[in-house]
Amino acid sequence: MSPTRIIIDTDPGQDDACAILMALASPEQLTVEAITTVGGNTGIANTTRNAAAILELAGRADIPLYQGCDLPLLRSPVRGEHVHGETGLDGADLPRPAKQPEAQHAVDFLIAKLRAEPPGALTVVTLGPMTNLALALRKAPDIASRIARIVSMIGACFEGGNITPNAEFNAYVDPEAAKIVFGAGIPMVVLPLDVTHQILTTKPRQARLKALGNRAGACVTGMLCFSERFDLKKYESDGAPLHDPCTIAWLLRPELFQGRDVNIEVETQSALCVGETVVDYWQVTGRPTNAFYCRDADAEGFFDLLIERIARLP
Image 1 (tube, rainbow, N blue to C red):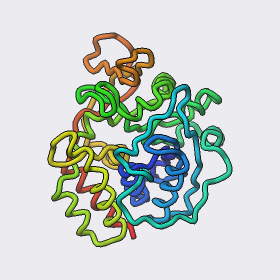
Image 2 (cartoon, rainbow, N blue to C red):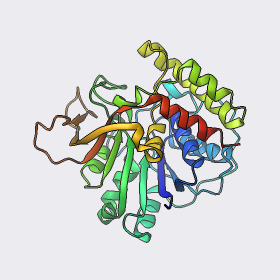
Image 3 (spheres, rainbow, N blue to C red):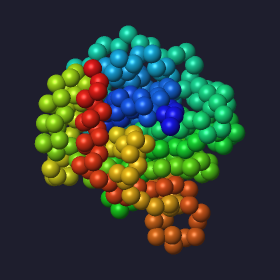
């Protein structure tokens, strides 16, 4: 079976970095066609530089990198440096990237790439705010029918929010963008906080990563030790949630996750609930389903997979 061809849209972010490394370490199952960057966890200059550093860490500077939107469609930016550090990727000794982004804007790249490929050839993986993809869909609505599926770390329902009481960060930063994407009629798989809060970076799991002995394992350990300090204090749990790699794990081993088809709408009006993903999990509204919503995960199976893949890298 041919590898799934993916474009990763991202705002690295320590957990974004783990997701990208996991994908790059799985060439028999995934072909990473390009990385596109968006402002989110930090500003676009940092997220683009961070993505370049991750590619160089993995020895994959050959993969094209496209810089995208820094600001949400309509709102003032909200950043996550309080979690991810000043650079957005604090905690690891990453290579100083020589790689530069391509001249083409990420939005224009998405449109051109999707139009150039047969319908259904490409899957888009979103790890940050959905600004780039939403703008591409607004400029070129025809690309919606060309995307095989979108796999996204976004949203929450039963767990509440992580940036407001009701909203998950990626949806909150650009709710108008998320609303456009969820309404585009594209098959979607959603990995929300309901799942990622089951994937905890406990001390024994961190020790397994550190024991790999390669540079990638050391960098992942350093990054996660830095970013988890915020969540450990916040949630008073045995480990911090590891969000974005759940998207790649679903692509590699979907049997690790359980969920159901639901309707998801994104709140853009309420001052209290802006960015909330309103999940009709019990099908009480009669609205047509528009996403497969993952609610449960095999955490041990996930970490076995993550560690096995990070071990493959330099």
